[in-house]
Image 1: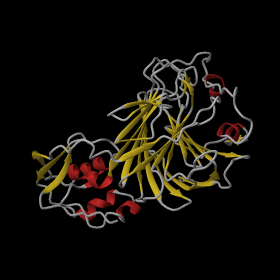
Image 2 (image 1 turned 180 degrees about the horizontal axis):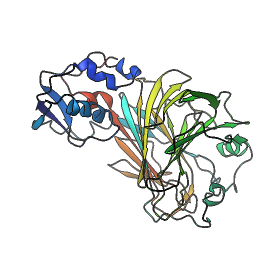
Image 3 (image 1 turned 60 degrees about the vertical axis):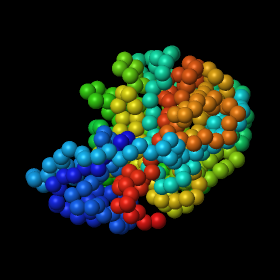
Image 4 (image 1 turned 90 degrees about the horizontal axis):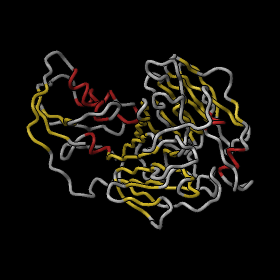
Length: 389
């Protein structure tokens, strides 16, 4: 995104009052933002739900006298590589099991970053072969446990779970419906506390069904697991009932584990109108997530609290071979790598995990991109940036 230094006649509200648009934990890390008189930072193309858009919109709307005039200058482009705030490491291994998450790519950040996770349909035509009029994930996204070991793997853990999601959602406003599920054999010793609209319950898996605009259909678009794993998918293309999940992303400082990396979530407070999620981790720290979804993409924006330990995200998926995989290539913008190629690490500001080859496994599952943006740079450029550490 490009930025311009702009002049306006905005005079109402102090920089401190402008920070009220942020959640309290984020405001506490921005105690001394100061702008020179009559100047602010203008995004050329502000994005909905982004921190920049949140700052931008109140400046435009505040007071009847507010007018934003032409921008005076453009901040020069930064040298190549300066904005490469993420480092992706290859910790994957081979497998013969199509239900095992053998693709393990943790993303480390060199600064406090905001993340955006985008799920888009694969580049080949989305189909759901063998599905009837009513999309049944058990049939349309059939698991293939051939070649899978019987103990000690992710596939075994999740296959052995006894899932119960109750008879009623914990929230349903006829746009977003949230279901909280418990798993009798959940592999972690904890449950997460989920709060929405005054309803507080505990469970291991939070599921969101979201209404398609101008349709009476409510497909599943988001699943959050207690161990920090998250899955998102867009609404299906027109004429398709639904699509499958595929790859996962762990959002937070996941601990390495022999079977499955994890970061335990202690609590989720939901704002259903977003929908947005205030995440509290059992190990300390918080994050603020907001989701939007349509037929083209599911877009999850993540602002974590500042911390330096562990990765900021971990991409998890499966690859047995090209054509039997939920991902087969990684694009960093500067290079394209086979997901199971010989590489150790790669830097970038955005990574696209995609399928270049038609896959028989979860045919309709989305490609996933993860982008990192330096929070300090997003909020105010030097020399007027004073963000507490």
